[in-house]
Amino acid sequence: MKLTYQSLIPINDKTIDDKLSDDKLSDVKLSDDKLSDDKLSDDKLSDDKLSDDKLSDDKLSKAKDIIRSLKNPSNEADSFKNFIALYECFTPSEWLNPDILFEISNYIARTRSELVDLGTRLNVQVNLYLRTIANYHSDPDKILGLDYSNNIGCFALTESDAGVLSGLIVDVKFEETKDKYILNSNQVCKKWISQGMLASKGLVIASNISNHRDCRIFIIDFSSDSIKQSNESIKQSNESIKQSNESIKQSNESIKQSNESIIRTQMRDIPVSKYLDLAEIRFDDLVLSKSQVLDKTIPLSRKEILTGIFYGRLCLAEVVMNSISEFVNMVYNKIKDIEKFKKIGHYDYIHKLNNNLIDYCLNMKKNRQTLLTNGDVMRINCYKIYCVETAIYIYNKIHIMFGTHAFGFGLDYQTLILNKIAEGDTSVLKLACIKEYLNKYGIIRGINYRHWYKISTNPIKYVMDNKDIIFDEIVGSQIDIITSIYL
Ligand SMILES: Cc1cc2nc3c(=O)[nH]c(=O)nc-3n(C[C@H](O)[C@H](O)[C@H](O)COP(=O)(O)OP(=O)(O)OC[C@H]3O[C@@H](n4cnc5c(N)ncnc54)[C@H](O)[C@@H]3O)c2cc1C
Image (cartoon, rainbow, N blue to C red; front, top):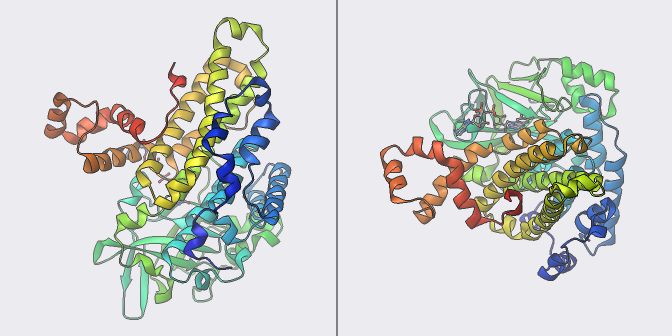
């Protein structure tokens, strides 16, 4: 396994290019017979050939078989087992190929949208854990080791007082001495950390005690001997896949890793994603060797580090669009033969919307490689904001238009809200986008002099009050939008 920068670049695959050429895309103006479930998910979106390599195709089919056959979890251990069953279908290098990861993530969104825990674990493991190491360490293999099955990670950025602003405020501190680092969380903790209890390793973002702008990413080995752990049950949890559900449950109950240097606490009683193990993590004089820093983060500013972590955001945008597209397709198929919906015009609306969403998902797939290889963060942020907020809009509108006919799809409202928060809350991203756009272009089309006057007298209030209108101006100039949904 060699995690080189090359492995971050989507595979150069003529078949994909062919499939997604403009001609092919325009073919996707759907006739009714193209709208059957099978055609939609298999022919068009999911089974586009990812590689000439037969092996890769076989692995993809196997992974899809596994996804279809997974039982709904009844606890975190089940959820973790499901994840491992899927994760073992590919090597880490293969997972780092965005065409494989996005394909599988979109497949989960379309066929098993209720498995939000599975999608989240995959995103955390690949886009946040593996990819950050591959991106920010000069020798990723050394850090990851060859035993990749035992390399399940978490990503600890968010803090107790920081919320969605965690990217801006990092209060977990590191102190650098000649031969080591010492990590302290003081009064705060890392919070909402997905896979935080069951992961064997974790990436932790901390800032320098003597310069808060100097942020670095550290890798923590939760089961390492160097980190003395007197609580054996946590160590067991790292081998959880081999354990019975009962013992994993016990390890999750073990609230503290009582070596006093790392304290992992299971977040309980949270109303979303109850099959995710979400942790709070504290550090008390945790001693790390110099090799535990991701070395490429040392010269980078906090902003540079965080803007370099964008794959998960685009992945999430595609996932949300694919799940809402499948939801609309399901409702369309249910109502298409009901006469009354033709009479009241709802049929025309959903028919058009369904076509638009399918086109939109294909276009996203087509644009993916360019966006990622160019690191086009502004556009990626626009996709994240636009896709999540549009999905919420459509979800509500379809339920209002079709009532009970819209029931029965695995996607629920809270999952959509979770997608709004995860990988950067869309409200906060909007502000960042507006700021960046103004810095780059100096003006936003549609904002007149009166508005500019208000901006200059009280810019923060003005932008907060008008961020949706202003963003609408920006988004249309950056990415494709679906116009018909506003008809
Ligand atoms: C299931 C789940 C898994 C997660 N996994 C991880 C993980 O693995 N690693 C990790 O580091 N983090 C993780 N997070 C944290 C997540 O990314 C958010 O940072 C965190 O949930 C804070 O969100 P909040 O709604 O509590 O933020 P709050 O700051 O309380 O914000 C609440 C709302 O206020 C508004 N708001 C707040 N600040 C602003 C602003 N500046 N401008 C405009 N509007 C604003 C927004 O609408 C926002 O939704 C996870 C969260 C969840 C729910």
